[in-house]
Length: 181
Image (cartoon, rainbow, N blue to C red; front, side, top):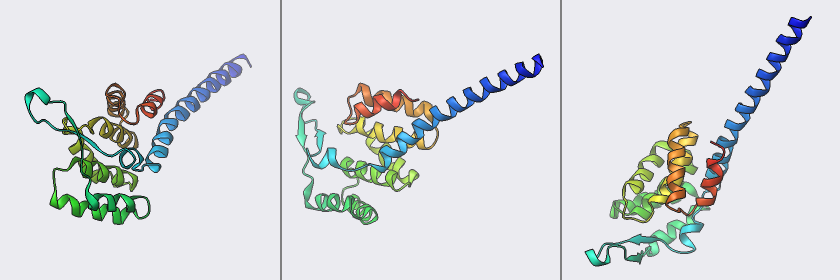
């Protein structure tokens, strides 16, 4: 009788621990999925895009507002209504300006939302590797979400920490998500 009670107690403790760890790991995945489903361009269209341009050694940190142009603005307007059409428009724009980090960021965000992870990764890493763009911290946020979705928590944690330290547009969300990893 005493052995049965001991075995039952051990199993109960094990079950509670397993449920706790399963639930806490799902919190991170569920939070990331919610953030992915809510991806939009509010941070970028409301205040405009910012890019660091190096004009001379004395003015290396000069910030200049990007000219988004009517074509990008048109694609931005489609983003919320028809994501696949917006992706096609951004891809067309990228053909004329393959180095445009703001288009790469938009495509990375959009492909992440559409669950096209390889395409998203390609565009987001392009932005992330472009250190002078001013958009690297935000690309870290989206890459972290992508890594959580791909069940790579260590890489996601590193990217979220980068997002917080570099004060990305999603700093508060990154801090909250870091608490769950």
